[in-house]
Length: 396
Ligand code: PMP
Image (cartoon, rainbow, N blue to C red):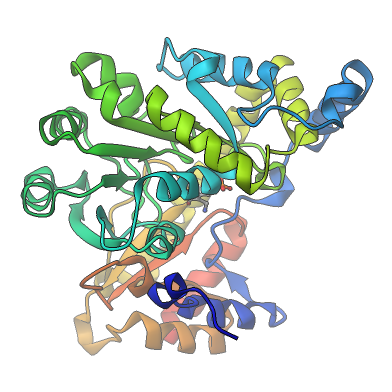
C-alpha cells in the first residue's frame, strides 16, 4: 500500500518492543508513564457520573460544541485560577481529548514540512513523534537539574528561528526536572523577543511533594509584557484524576485557538460530552483538593523510597537529581567500578532479573545519551520499589 510521505518522518518506537515483555509474570515495572489505578477516586467519579446523567442527560449524551462543554470550561478556568493562573476566561480555553490532542492540534496548526521546532533534550517521546509527523525538524536544547539551559536555548532560537519551542517546565517527562523561576521569566522574554510560540505542557505541575513549584509560565506571563501573545498552555486531568477520561485542555492566543478549533472539528468533532460532563461535575463537587492531597502523599513516599533505594543499592554507579514532584526519576549510569553504562543493554538484563524500565535514548530528538534511563515510581508500592531496585542492582 502507498502510505503518505509524512509517515517517512517517524518510526515505531523501540521501547514498544520492550513493553511487549512487560507481561512476564512477576515483573516489577518502573517502565510505564501511568498513574496508579489503585489510586483512582472511583467513588467520586461514580457520583459525578450519576449526577451528569441525572441532571444533564441531554447534554452528556448528545453531540456538543467543538470548543468544549461550557460548564467544564468554566470549571477548568476556575481550576487554573486556583493554581495561580488568574484571568483565563472559559472562552480562552478549549477542551481537548487528553493533552495529547492539544499537542497534535498545535502540530497541525503550526508545523509544515521542513519547519523547525525546539524541544528539551530529553523530552516526551510522543511530542517528538507528533511534531515529526507534521514534517518538523526537531532540535534539542540541553537541560540540567533546573530545566532547559536558557543561554543555549536562546542561541538555538536565534540560529534556527523555530515555529515553536516546546517545554515541560514542571517535573518534566522523562527528566523530572523543574525550570527555575529566573529561567521561567527568561524563556517568556525569549518568546517575546524572537516572536516565537512557546508551548508549556503541564500535566505534572499539581503532583508536587513538598513546597509548590514555581508558578506556571501561564501564571507568570502577566509579569512579562506581551508574553501571553506567544504562549500556549496544555493541561490535563490524566495524571491527577484519570487518563481514561481523556480530558485535557489548551489555552492559547485567540487566533491560534480558533485555528485549533477548526482542526479539532475535522478530527473528533468534540471531546466525549459524557466524559466532559462527568469531569465538570467532579470539579464542581469540590473533590479535587482532597484527591490532589492524596496522590501527592502517595507519590512523595514512593519517590523517596525509590531514591533511597537507588542510593543504597547502586551507589556511585548512578547519578540523579531527586525529583520534587511528578512521576519520574531520570538516571545516568556513570560506569563507575566498570559497571554497565549502556542503558539499553541494561534494560535487557533487567528484564531477565524481573524488573523493567525505559532506556533514555528514545527521549532525545538529537544527540542521545545512551547512559540515561527513566524510572517511574508511580505504580509500584514501597515494598515492590525496594525489591525492584535490588533486582536492578543485580542486573547492573
Ligand atoms: N504531555 C506529557 C509530558 C505527558 O507525559 C503525557 C502523558 N504521558 C501527555 C502530555 C499526554 O497526556 P494525556 O493525553 O493523557 O493528557
